Length: 186
Image (cartoon, rainbow, N blue to C red; front, side, top):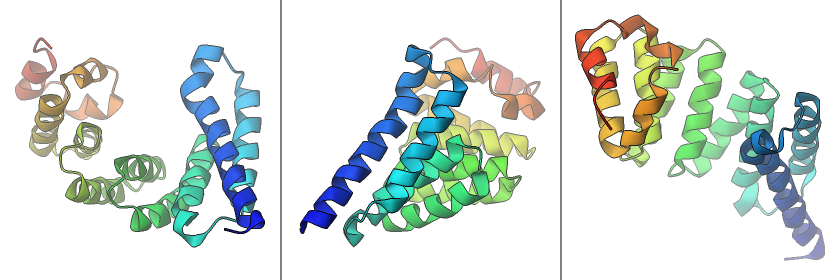
């Protein structure tokens, strides 16, 4: 790998570091929203401009997509994430982020399709099943949503603590099967 590409890989790693700082560490550090936005823009520019080998293009697209998602540019984020998912379909985090962005652009049916596709590649991913349950519930498909939620909770019972706070479940909240499921002990 020539020096230019090596520097590009280092630049991409730095962009990933900034992204990690503003996603997982930000709440613990109490980073102000303005600083988070500034770091997201910096990470986005670094990833965009990093001359990386083709084999790492998916990582650049993922960082760019996540930065755009944090900047609430959901349509642009979805474009980057979709390209990353085509290259790396076995990475559930890409499908989750893509579905999340599509949900926020009002394309709920596309979010369902994307998360379902992610489950094709990683069928035992609890987060994908949980998000699919959310999207199906928001679409009023209660029985299918409950089926996916059962699957998610079977794989990862700790997800039960997120049910009450999830607004997507509001359309099915009074369904007896949903109530029984959401109140079972972990």
